[in-house]
Length: 309
Image (cartoon, rainbow, N blue to C red; front, side, top):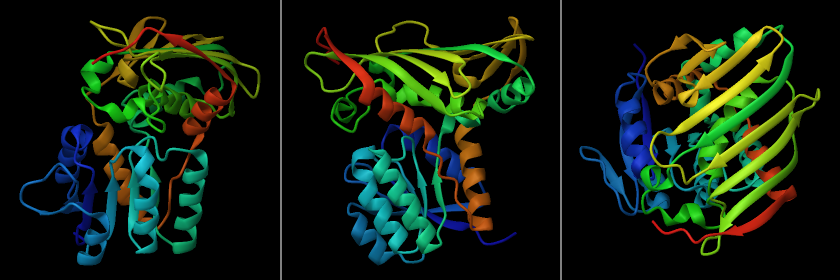
């Protein structure tokens, strides 16, 4: 076996603890050697509060996984790339398309691996769904992605600030699956963004879109759903109706379950990262981020009721 890749995890919050740490420690291709966070720590490894101090002190750590909020991620990623480190970006990869494209350019020039992750693309039913759709005529696509922000982002004020994405933080997961299923680019026709009067980012959004070939696509994102959560994508075709449910973990054809399995999204992300590093290649697809940016560009903003955690 080759020597494990020495990796640092940056931003020790809920997603890092719930998903990244178990996936890293469960993958023999990696060894978690350092953590960087102002507020969190990981036991058993060296911890830093300052990213610059980490880069200076640990040149032996050759890969960095950035799990910070997107608005502070660009500077860290750019510094890591300049230091010759391979970089994994949690979704969304950056606060803007400009930042994301700049990072891709910097990584190419430096010859390092850049991996812009979209964890929902690694859900167990996404690849089978794409395979099932091959050769079929798509008539219509609808997305319903509704969840409870209090359950998934408790007390995380940054998601309501500029660069925090609001309801598009989960909604971009649906868009990442959509763009994985389609070969055509997705065009936003119009959008309606519901913004609480005491917040700066939307709590709900509806999008009317189309593929470049003219397939109508609708999306309904909402962060106010209590009880059972809804993460569904329905594709009507000339050969039946495909439905991805539970965020891509279940696939139905004409209401018959044909694919399901356990959650291995982040385990598969790190398997992909290891493969990219081994082959010295990058995977930097920003299509989902571009759709969100287009929704803000052409969207109608509507004030709605105040929201309190």
